[in-house]
Image (cartoon, rainbow, N blue to C red; front, side, top):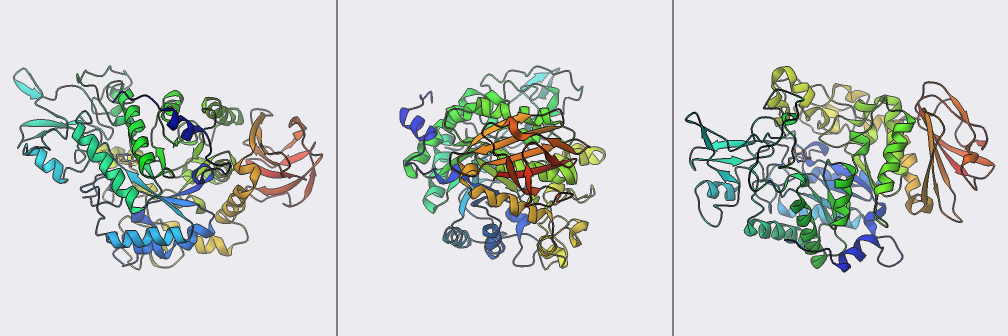
Length: 559
Ligand code: NOJ
């Protein structure tokens, strides 16, 4: 386990193979949740054939590939992150043949396919867990079991660990007469990674999918893989008196253990052994040092969640620039950044940032160096969908109870993609869909946005098109602060057109002198304004007096 980082991993991690950048270093990646993308058979749930029918949309939108969230057999207590067979397809989505066809079609269209790898836990319906309950070897110790302790003659869990979704992370199992441990829902028992057989199973799963031909893995919930082997009590934060709240304790003994990183290193070795062009991207909400440590241990990149966790629509320019600079400062030499502004666990980008700022964030995600990740529907500015308590399915919402479910439920961000103004937004022929379609679909939909002169989607296309320019894929990044409301960044590469992005978070228009960027030309071409107002785009402007309207961002080219 205590493997050292080998020189070969180091070389592969930090340097391009042959002068050309490896495919994943510049990719624009789409996060595609099969359940909510496109339903082909009218049962109200998205499926593989539905995805196949829409692959051209991903190409037209400039994506280089997509990450499929879990499609494995599952009782769907947690959006499919409760897996009951890691090497099969849930019949709701299709068959293994449908998956293989999808992969082939995607590859024929030059789209890469990355899949979700969920190693921390399985579903309690997984055969391994069922056998573990019955102490059938070799599964007896696949999961974390403990008989608990007695307090005043009453049996209680062994410690105060709280699950992410709320409540004790220990659940009593009558049949085995022991508690099992789960970081997430009760239906998601955690594996015991100190068991070598479990570690080997996980490697076999990776190998299985690599051999199928996938292009990489998004690795789920990595901060949670190992827990303290002495099961020590967590310290209390004092922030809440509710022992069922995840925030009740710190998580020193249940998150970010160094063994998690050692697993990353082992998985990287497996991947490299079978297919060196496969990519490994890590889901970890962690501080900057712990996030960067994933690079050191062999990940191609961890998701950079700074635009989710560290800024909001009220952040000033200083703050946003700081979040970008901090990431770039800590980034290891030669490593590739990623920029993520939304996903299936967070409120929608448009809902968090509002109509003016959301496109500015998208612009940054697309034009900063490295990988850009777009969550299903954010490219058409979909908004959170209001769902009633009765309609709520997410365990995080359900566990919060009727009064608080809206604060915690992730269902509002997971409703079906809005293709057009027909039944169920063109997602399904069925008027009843697995989660209700947003009421605004008659106006907020792809078809309407394609037809409009100006729209969120058109703006997305205009910005993402620039990713093909050498200064965006390979150029240097410089950031400059003008005042609390305004900052700018440049993407420059010798002998290539330079790009300047000016962001005005303030409520007043500004006129700026961009000559603070060394070597800038005296005239610039205005390519795009996020809200397309006031200034005609395409016009030539003087570098020393660039006008940017309030709560707007401008993209300019060196002339
Ligand atoms: C992270 C996933 O993004 C989230 O949706 C899920 O609930 C947890 N991991 C548990 O698998």
